[in-house]
Structure formats: C-alpha cells, structure tokens
Amino acid sequence: MKHNAPFFFTLLITLSVFSCNNPKLPNEPNQIQTYPKPLVEDITTQEEQKALKPDTVIVRLKAGNKRFVENNVTARDHSKMVRATSSGQYPKSVVLSCLDSRIPVEDVFDKGIGDMFVARNAGNIVNEDLLGSMEYACKVSGAKLILVMGHSGCGAVKSAIDDVKMGNITAMLAKIKPAVALSEYFNGEKNSKNGPYTDEVGKNNVLNTIETIKQRSQILKEMLDKGEIKIAGAFYDINSGVVTFL
Image (tube, rainbow, N blue to C red):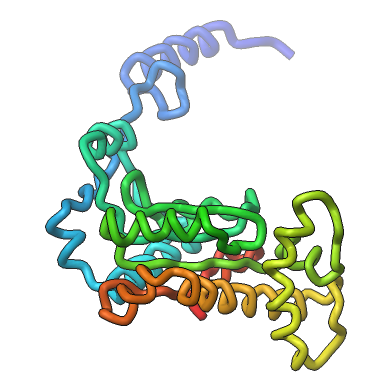
C-alpha cells in the first residue's frame, strides 16, 4: 500500500494547530486544579457552652453520626482550630468509649478539635481515675453530657463471658461480669461465639457503667439531678458505623 505524503503532512499540521489552540485536560500534569476551601466549624465559646442543654448536645451528636455514616463529614481547617483553642477549651460532652481501634470517636460523631473529651479503655468501664476525669470534664470544664458507648463484637465483653484470667486483664473483666449476669434472660445460646448474645451483654455493660457512675460519683449525681448534665448510653455498630442511643 502506498502512503499519500501530502495527506499525512496536512494531518500533522492540523493536529499541531488543534493542540495549540485547546487547553490542557484536567488530568494533564501542568493543569492547575482548584479545591474547595475547607469549612471551619466555629469553636464553642464559654457563653455558648453555658447556654447549651444536654438534649441539644445529643441531637448534635446524632446529626454528626448521620453525616459520618453518609460519608458527608465536615471539612475542617485543623491548623486554624488548633490555634483557636490554644487559649482555652469548652467541650460539649465527654464520651467513654472502648479501646477498640475501629471506633475513632471524634470521627464517628463528626466532631473536631475542642468539641469533646474522650476517655477510652477496653470494655468502656469506669474506675476512680475515669470518675475523676468525668467530674473534671463536667464540674470544672462545663461539659453537658456524659455518653457511655459500647460496640458490637467487643473483645473485652467476649473475654468476660469466657471468664478469661490473665494478668491485670482479670481485674478489668471483673467490672464487665455484672453485665453477663444481667443478660441471663437472653433466649438463645449464651456464649462468646453468639453475636446477638455478646451484643446484648455489651449493651447491658453500657447500662451498668451508667449506674456505676451515678452510684460512685456524688458530684455527677447531683449535677444529673439538677438537670445540669445528662448521662446517656449508646451502642456503635462496627459493620455500619451507626450509633444507636440506648
């Protein structure tokens, strides 16, 4: 087959002109791309914190979790928030969560720097140190809500069900054992391999932790009775990211 030289020469000139007269496509390396400016959520002031009601804080946490589940979380300028909170903090809540690495508490509720106190341990249980921390968070720093949050498939709960004995873990699991006893009514196999059962024990562990807080902290109990704070329970589904308030 013979090539038509004049035709190929004309085609080359046409392509060169087209390339010079058209802008680069977005995926070309020299194209300058613009990105939306990060949203900056206002840092809570002391006056705003004082005016907050505990129920309002719960509503906002529920809304934040909805955004998290829908992958519609707030874009934040963290550097700016760090500077804005450097002179003080006025968190709205304190969350006691499990140590589990799959539950990034601030992310779960779409909250940022300065929004909440977070305490974590295996099995979301309370001891003297955590009670003192909660008293500080509420009585001194003005938080309006204590939220105890357990989660599905909790390893600490399963270990308590299995009566595991190991170093300091033994004493820790003893604080979860009451929830095992509270779950005797469960209709089904009562072992750590039964997901619905372990989750039922986990929910009862949340409720038992709440009762322990009320019984062992006179300061928090008085604040609760006066309506200054609320103590609530929640359960996180590790499969969906949904938080259910108990």
